[in-house]
Length: 598
Image (cartoon, rainbow, N blue to C red):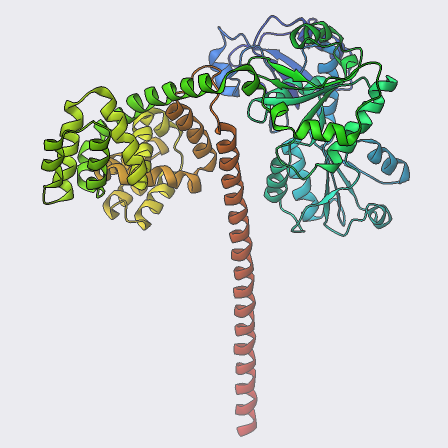
C-alpha cells in the first residue's frame, strides 16, 4: 500500500489484487480514514482500501455496482456487502474483522460448544455433518456466505457434540435471538436454496438488539412503518430486570409473525441519547418501551413510574397487544382526515393512471370487454351517462359496439368519468385489466427492460408454449446473434401480439429471470401507486414479502425438478446398464448353446 492508507480509485485500476477490499463512494469520510489507518498497521490481514469519487469515477462505480453515494462497500471473495451501520471507526473495524472470519465456525469441543450457547443476541444456525467434504455441508457453507457476517453459522462433525445439541446427521437448527429452544429446519438434507428461503422467511426476530454495524438496516425494517422500541441498559439493575421481562414476553409470543421488538441499549449509542430523549420526550436514565412511527417520529410510550416496580410480563404483554397502543398514526391524525387524504390520492391516481391505461388500450378494450351492460348501468347510476346515451349503448347488438359507445360517452364527459370507467373495468374485467396494466408498464420501461433482458430465447419458448408467440418469431429470436438483438427481435413479436402477449412476457420473467422480475415488480408497484420520495403506501411491504415468497418457492420448485431429473437420469443409466448385462448374458448363452450343439 501507499504511505497513505486512502487511495483514490481511478479507471483501469486492477481491483482484483486483493482478496478483500473496502470501497467508499464519497471522499469525505473521517471514519473511513481512521479505519484504514488502523488496518494499515496490520501486516497479516489481507485488506485493501479504495476510494471512488462519485462525480469523477461514475464508470467505475457503475461497473462495481456501487449505486449509493456516501456508502461503504466491502468486497469479500465473490460477495459485495454494503456496510449499513454507524459511521464510527471502531464499529467499522469490528465489522471488518467479522467479515474476514470464515462464514461457518466449526464446533470441535465442549469449550467451543459453551461459546456457541453464550451467543444469544444474533440469529444463528448449527448443523451436524459427516465432514467438510460432505456435499450437504458444502450447501450449508454456500448458504452461510449469502448472510455472512449478519447471521452466525456453526457446524460440527463430532457425534458427541451433535448429541448434546440434539442434532441428527445433516440436520440444521435455527436459533432466534434470545430464544432458548431452536427450530428444526424441515426437509433434511437441505440445499442452499432451501436454507436461504427459510432464513429470509424468519429474518425478523420477535426481539432483536440494535447494534452499531446494522442500525440503519434494522431501523428501516418496519412493520407498517412502525417499531416497538425498548430502551434498557443491560448493566443497570432496572434495565437488566426489564430486559429479562421483555425476553419472557418475546418467548411467549414468538409464533406471532407481526410482532417485532427492537431493544436499544443507550450505553451503545451515547451520542444519540440526547436526540432520542428530545425527539420522543422520554428519560433514558430508566427503561422505556413505546411504539414509534419511523416516517414522522410520532410515538407513544408506556407510562412507567420510577418509584414503582417494573411491569410484569403479563402487563407488558397486554400493553403490546392493545391495538390503540400499536396505532401511532391513528392517535396523531383524525380518522376522517386520514380517510379524506387517502381518498383524494386514490382519485388522482385513478384519473391519471386509469385514464392513460384506457386510452392506450382503447382498441383492445373494445374488442375484449364483455360486461358492457353492467358497466353502462353503473355509469348511469353515478350520473356519468345520460338516459338517452344509456339506451343507445345497451340497445347495441354486440359487446364490441356497446364498449365503443361507452368509450365515446366517457371521452366526451368530464375527467372523473375516465377514472370511474377504470375502476369499473377493474371490478368487472379484472383479468383483462391486469394484462393491460402489465402491458402498459413494459411499454413504459421498454428501453431499460430490453437492456436487462438476458434470456430472451427462454422467454420466447414459454410464450410459444402458451400460444402467445408464433413459431416464426420464436425461430427469429433463436437465430438472432447476441442478447440485445434477441431481446429486440422478441419485442417486435410482442408488438404483433398486443396486450395479451406483453402480459405473458411479463409473467414469463418470473420463471426465466426471477431476480429481474422482482426488480420490475417493485418498480411497477411504485409507479402504479404513484410513490415519490419517501411516501409510504399501505400493503407495500406485504406485497414485496409475497413476491419474495413467490421467488423462493420458484427456486425450491426448480431444485426439486433438478433432483427429479437427476434421479431419472440415474434410473435410466441403471436400466441401460441392466440391458447391456442382459445382452451380454444372451450372447454368452448363445455361445454355450452353439458349443453344445457341436
